[in-house]
Structure formats: structure tokens, C-alpha cells
Length: 81
Image (cartoon, rainbow, N blue to C red; front, side, top):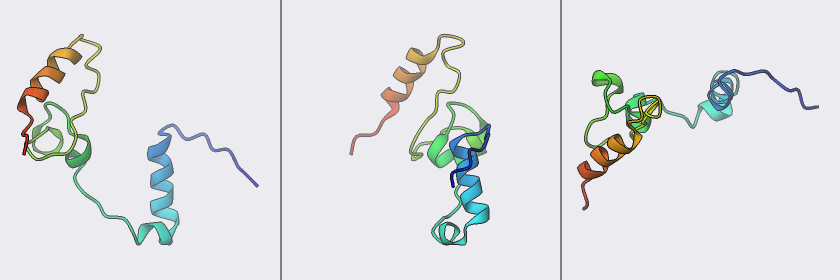
């Protein structure tokens, strides 16, 4: 039977539930710094983007209307191998 849950974090809460309650999933997971998959344009050594990180997340860029500027800045930094 399906039980609907009221999870505020949506997919994040679902992943946390799988990690903490289901050993079969936990055996195939690893933990890495958030920065590797979800870095911010600025944010210090733990959260700020560094060369080699996979993704930069322009969280809230729309508030100050900086999305295009941030995108162009980071696009110009890309390294084409």
C-alpha cells in the first residue's frame, strides 16, 4: 500500500530516507563534498566552485538579476580538452 509522505526537502528527504533505512541502497553509496556536484559561484572552500568541480549552481541569481552575468563568467572559464 502506498503511503504519501509530507517531505519538505522532496528528493533530498527521499534520498536521506533510502540511505538511513535501507542497507541495500547504503551499500552502493559514497559521500563526497557537496562542492563536487553542487558548488556555488562563491562560498569558501566547502561550497564555492573550484576548477575541476562538475557543476556550479547559480542559486538565487534571479533575485539580483545576475544569472546571465554569472553564466557568461563561468562559461568563459571552461576548459576544452
